[in-house]
Image (tube, rainbow, N blue to C red):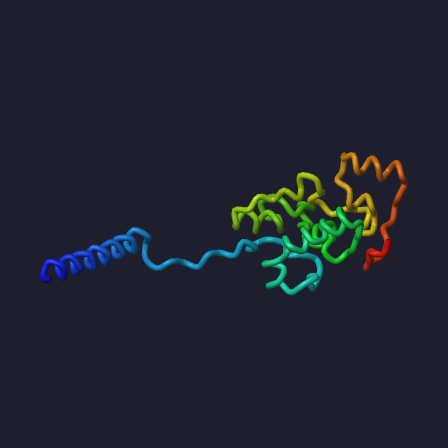
Length: 166
């Protein structure tokens, strides 16, 4: 029984020494983590499309839902349209949501998440306005060429409801 008690005491002491050494190596108490949005232009609007806590947690789901409605069902609504996000959150100095102090880039870099939206979509505000089909099409893409060929200039107004009747 004494051997078992001695082994437990040794294990507890070893764990205590390990944590004391780890604390000493870390430099003491931890410092608060800086906000990823420090020094970042937050937007030209006074209110986002949803509360800040909701947008921080669910913005990707909103964008994916909008993409699904648009691509699969042909429904275009304005609320979670990526061009509206870029129009509001693009830094006035750089005219982009990317870069060192870009609205999207700063949080995505902080969270170590790769942004692939802007491999097709523009990271700069569109001068044609949020209702323009050209604002939705990636520049220099087949979609942009098709839109120019059809001479479509305006989208249907929001909200658009798809009919499920056949």
